Image (cartoon, rainbow, N blue to C red):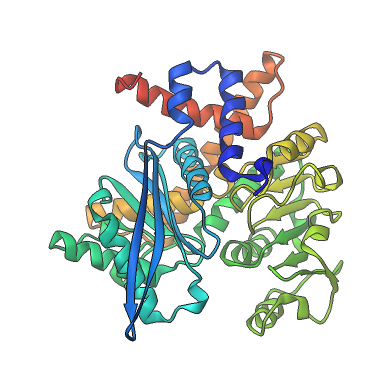
Length: 419
């Protein structure tokens, strides 16, 4: 992996940039550049007389503000640096949302598409047994992420409950509703992004009813984003892509037809539209660009060709630091991932609160609370940007978000006596 695209190096570079501007204490800065705890485990899985050993990770980046919080990924190309970066971003995400968590992340190197349900269950339970002493509802609370799902979370919760000898629903979030997951959890990442989009459109005086939208990615976040941006605002989605490629139609794309097409393979088979590549989608002439796929999609090589007025980062790390600078200088409002996609962890927090209190909320209550928290986060970011602008220091929304989040974590470490 090129050094400039190493996700953990990128996360450190983003932190360093904010630390310099805000004149962060040297020791606090040093603490925050690395995880407080990195766990690597080997998970033996025996099925049908054969055995294989999978490597798993759990990175607990910082717990000054509360228990670690972060998802678990199953991916054949999972790496420790990726998990470390995601754990760092979770630390800033929970701090920016101002919920009582720190940041963590987990992953297992595997290809879940090649594993049957029996093997997946054995692997998932083995991961929890390997990490059982280091997680818990008051220690570190995992959740689903790439290629993991509510069923896998159910197995993990059940295995942890067996380890401790009683039901412990609050150890995992993103669970099925049957075992006390939360209403509104499954589209929460995209829903939170929609609330941020609504507020950012007000900032730029964009009428979302007449706005054109391109969405990179048609997985969980991108799929819900497509559905919600049309349902909530009436915007026209003219381009969308998956891992194979994309499709463009100036007349707008039909959600139901795209879903049916995707079930048969790839959305590139969509009949009424022009085939485009993922790279071409990023530079389409639209009002709103929503990267909802993987990291490092907008880089210094293509950022100057981005035409959107708003870039809504629903994916983790889709814009590199060099690209972030270019977009800012072009006057594009690039809203950072750990603000935009915080809806998932916010509603995970709600699930944990409901599990702890054994009292459950309606979907309407969940969305209302999510709207309140993430809108306040957006206001905090814009206010910080304006504060530095008044000091004649122009900073991007990402840097402003970092300053808000890092300041909160540093203060927690300070009052706890860490430095």
